[in-house]
Image 1 (cartoon, rainbow, N blue to C red):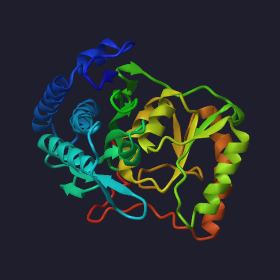
Image 2: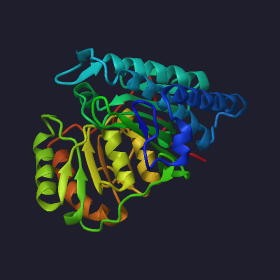
Image 3: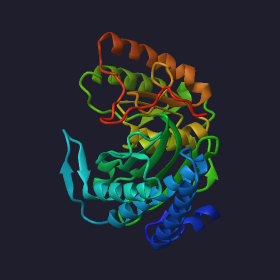
Image 4: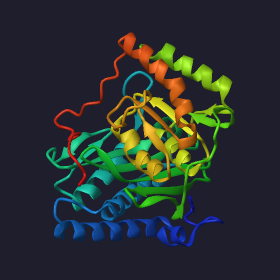
Length: 340
């Protein structure tokens, strides 16, 4: 873990101390990772090994984290998007930096940013999903738990991802780096992580984010009531990627959510899956980051959780709640293709 002043914190792995002991050195490390990935991309076929995608994801996330760290203790410039949703100058600046870094390495890939939409080549097999500042409200209020999230899909399947989480308080911010790649494991600050072994819902710490979607609200309230009553407790971090990483780390036991977007889930899903999480939609079908429901937990809890969420999903379908997958204008998701 790295302090806001750049000094490594006690308990950090040797890998993380080497990775980024100062803001300037983080920038140099990110540039080296990008240079390495760029050389590989130039010499490789259209199929890129997961390790190289992970190197690029980590480097790009660190570039974005640099922008966030530079701004984290400064006054915010906040604009409204829709309803109570907000965006800051830092969201836009971090996304621009991340996108430029990725397209420098993979100019023929597609990039989907929360703020800027689709860029790059929409015909590519690869789609990079960027949330430059997941938990913008937390960031705006100086509340711990915001992060930078960079994940990449191939044929709609998450292959690699990095989430840089900011924790602490104003003037005392530190970061931890979560990474994961297909068949490559999941890590926090370079140390392997895995989901919890909790076996009963009554002993589980549950995470979700309650957001006011009018057509869904009675169903979300129902789920929240059940889990508040029947589990050890319900927590809301304010950031989807953080919830998935906390699940991967075993600090929460299960996470359910509705209306996520690809940039919310792409990086966190691969990290959680590589840590041993079982992930599906809330009615038990195979999950895609374009789906509008998510259930993520360990193997022991999965069927118990599904027994709670599945009937609620049935009721949503009966009442014609909109659960159609998220669509990206100008991009065709290759859901039928194989990873071979």
